[in-house]
Length: 394
Ligand SMILES: *Cc1c(COP(=O)(O)O)cnc(C)c1O
Image 1: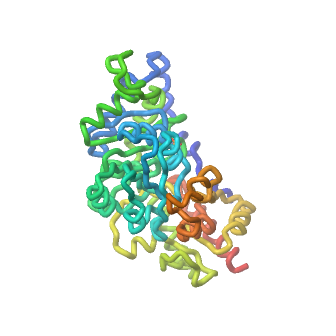
Image 2: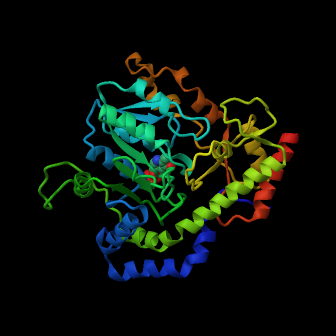
Image 3: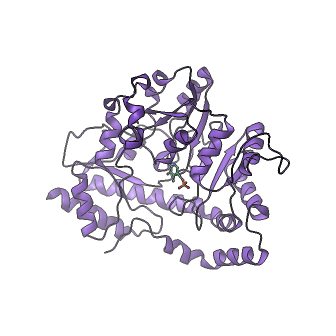
């Protein structure tokens, strides 16, 4: 049985007529950049996430970059980010000649370790970027409290978490000052190319983001600020407007699949839900998400990824691939181990010694993402668990 990590064609096939129609409409209008389709999508996103301003941009990476620019991040400013995330989270900070300061992550959620933030704050710290990794929100309450105390801007990297909710029901991206989303095709809400969105409840930030999206000119050709070309195009907006009404049913599909994985791993006697960054039983599969549920924390997780941890991860990966099961490692190299950041790590002034990130190191060495997309069948999920069981039994 073949089980791909993601099958975008299955979703396209189901909604082909509507999607093709949307593409044709854009072709016939010959209105390609920003315009009414983008405006419509922005309004729909505001309503869906219950947020005041949504600004369509060119990618999730550009969403983070423009957010930092609008927040006034300057060369030499420090921005706190978890060391375990997609590269863009830290890359955008360095692109502004600011300094990414890395924290370790939580072993249960893979999100920023809220107990590792405050000791990293210096007079140069200007912002924190919590990442809602794999589709689950970071623990925002303590982050907001720290941010208030130290007057920091909170920019949420919600690239994997559009419509995920924090415990009280607030949507990811609408909890801090600015929220950033990606519509890269493999995200839960994906377009037909690159695309992104920034959201905020702050009128002034909303206005600044809008101006910065078009090179910082307002009126056109008159520049008080320097922005860039961060525009979303109409084809992407049209596709996203077609897909947005289905996002909740897709999330439910992913949640159902994740719950089935948890159940099957438990029934097979393979589940370890201690939530620790170590293996007390090497023949078990760590299910951090199930642990999270056990703790009774009520986040609405949308499972952009379903990630387990196993002792012999690389061998398991080879075994799954041999059996035609797609899987991937998100992410094998944390920021503190990236070559491009070694100068930062080696500068004692930054206090980011290599041994300060044991949980991230453990996750990078042992985590593996399994297929969880909504169109998967129960048989496919059963096959994945059976294949892992066979591997562990040796
Ligand atoms: C995908 C992703 C991004 C970047 O989004 P792009 O649209 O690919 O530029 C940023 N952060 C995280 C956590 C992501 O998963």
